[in-house]
Image (cartoon, rainbow, N blue to C red):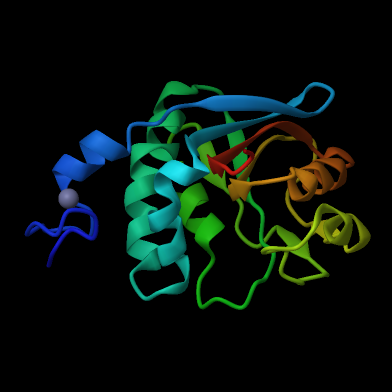
Length: 187
Ligand SMILES: [Zn+2]
């Protein structure tokens, strides 16, 4: 096949050269609620092309490659036991992108919790205003283990409302440490 970024022949959808050159994380951090931070691996603009493959048939492969360059590396560095909780907003895709990110952290210290944070409201926030998002909360339900440390995972943080809502819900039963996202889309 050919690399989707440089078109050279490659065994993967993104060649090794492009992975090294373009997928080196540039970590940023912002506070969502007092004491609760989101750490993002990339600026949205820098990996926009890749994130947009999400709704195509190669999306899952691309997400796996990007996650290996970011979530997997982070997991190896962060040696503290925790459960990894992907935010599932139930947008009607045939697989969950956030589950791919959580899976990339699976290892000695980190255990993914699939289908454990489900949204009762699956309305799409894409291109919606801040006001609309505020008026249409996700109404999350946390189904995972209680009294454990949790890392909340999502692919993109924009206003932070989704992650804040997830944090408030998880906090009632467990201990959210921080959130991790692939990209920060704030300007
Ligand atoms: Zn390439």
